[in-house]
Length: 191
Image (cartoon, rainbow, N blue to C red):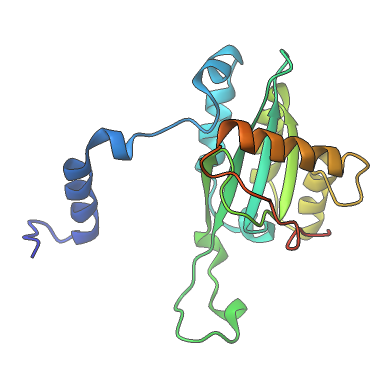
């Protein structure tokens, strides 16, 4: 039994868990290697801004997006954007759209590959990451989302799609060998 001292029991529980588990388990990791982040001016600020994105701008996004960031020194790294949808309730499997609250959506950034079924690939130069994040935050319609895809997405119809998928599988095996597997593209979106 947990003895709570405040009315905000959820926050208090998380604080207690954090104290108990320590910094090794709950350490905040950058979504890109520290060496590459520090070498690119402003990159950390753009990543932090993306991580704080909330609300209706995210309503057009698919659940899992993999972002490849290209650095000037030919290095490339990947991180995953996972969409956190918010529901009024989950009392039924039917009519989910009526229970969604897009104004409360958020995104989680994960270093490397998360999940086996990505829905979208983005290919962004480190120098363009600020523009990428700014365009995401400005999305207000399907048309705005399609404009983002036009600028940064690697679609199924893109001639570079399979070379991107091959690069991703190789990167996954190299940097996450304990988790790497075949990335299933059956749920990849076609917008």
